[in-house]
Length: 70
Image (cartoon, rainbow, N blue to C red):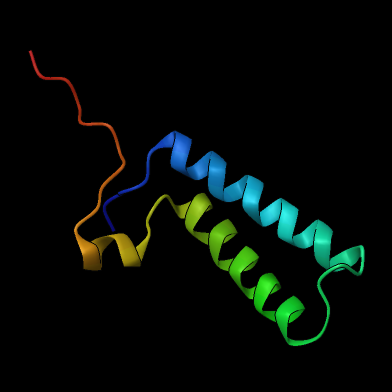
C-alpha cells in the first residue's frame, strides 16, 4: 500500500477519533450512534497509523506531499 495521507490529514483524523471516543465514554453518544461513532473512530485511528485510506483511492484523492526531485 502506498501512503496517500499527509500529516495534517492524519492529525485531523486522530483528533476526530479522540473526540468520538471521549463523547462515547462520557455518555454523550449512546446506543447505535455511539457504536457507529466508535467504529468510525477505530477506522480513523487505523488509517492514521497506516497512512493509507482506501476511500481516497476510490475517489482519486492524495493528501501526501509530493517528493522533491533535483
